[in-house]
Length: 386
Image 1 (cartoon, rainbow, N blue to C red):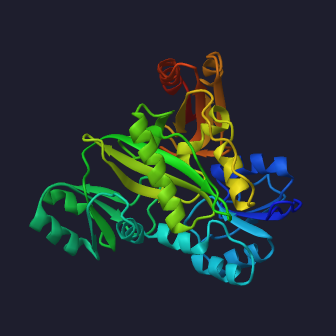
Image 2 (cartoon, rainbow, N blue to C red):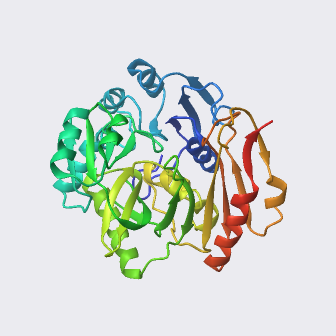
Image 3 (cartoon, rainbow, N blue to C red):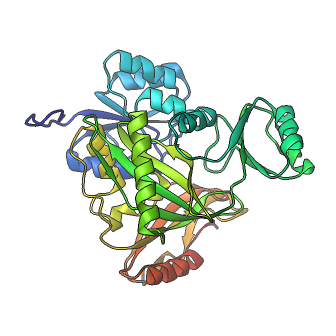
């Protein structure tokens, strides 16, 4: 393993906690470094199952399972942040590097701690109040009025754990648990920036991407790179992402999601300390993919070139509504007739409504043409069942 200038590199045992599609694409890159990959995931049919050297099936929330898995590794990383962080602290104390570090994961796991981190470091974010239960949330709304977004402090993922509260009847769906009450932001775009940082503090940042979300499930279903924003906004978003990486001290990859308001203010929505849905298109669109960059960061290598060599659009392939069963892909052959279309199927056997089943990246020198072709892809390919 490379640590300092002049030292040699040797293949090491890398443990990945989480065996989903992010882990799968990380393994595909890790093969180039001849790393010995082990994976822990609760699903015996996880996408990583047959790509790694060793696979363990077990709960990511169980202390003993995570600890025993990590003890066998020379380096541990994650592809999902909902992991038993106490086990990771224990591994770190025993000399096993864990990247991103447990203290970063502990903060990210709790949206309340995230918001306090932003305010403590003067990082722009939407106004918020922390509440303990539904009663406190309702009292706040009665006092202040307007529209709020309630976010569970812990456990939310992929649009789950978020509810909009604008009128009294909305509180029938409100969470009765510790949560963040955030004033709803009137924004014109949602953006994301990915930054990497290694143990020497060397950072590298990608162009901002622009995201469209599925209105039913609050999942990203369409994004373009680079975003259609001014150079000033681009630079400001990258600067904020780098500040968060620096202030948190993260080693690895960090995705930062923003709201861009109508008066061109950038507000940080949330962060993810790992490869991210907003970076899939970097595989084909950038000189260095987010997966290669994450490996470079946790192995303490120099960061790769983040240049966007060709504009791109990424389409998330979500399971069709009301479909649950063995997956069938419709329209795959048709979209491959379109130039510069790249398909990534995640290997999930079971299709569920709005489950992430794959993604497709479309390249074109003209971003408008890339968007046009990607809309055709979006209408054509379906993840469904017989």
